[in-house]
Amino acid sequence: MKKDIHPTNYRPVVFQDLNNGFTFLTRSTVATDDTIKLDDGKEYPLVKVHISSTSHPFFTGEERIVDVEGRVDKFKARRQAAEKAKAERAAKATKPKAKKAKAEAQKLGDKQQG
Image 1: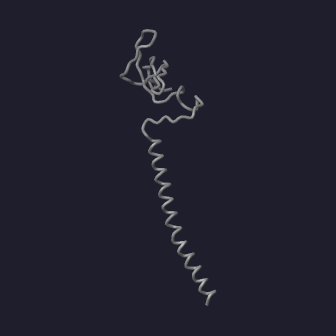
Image 2: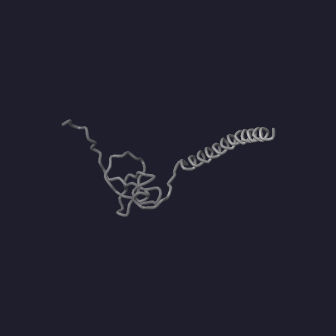
Image 3: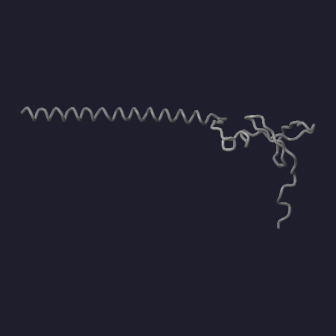
């Protein structure tokens, strides 16, 4: 096996969920400048995460949207714009058909009268 390919700087690190404030201590090699002092009185490196198993809907069973960057709002806006455009296209498409049907009905009426 190759030597010196695995990291050697494993140390205790605290991960904090920004949604609910839950923290857990584990070992990691992640680099961070933040620190936090836990109940045991020791100071540990801190890594802030947007979502963890305590706030993820798959693990909690809750249906809620955790949106940090506005992606859901952007999606909803695009969807509304698409529905509006579709409705406008449908309205334009029905107008010529109505005129055509009216013209055909008028021709048919003229043939029956004449």
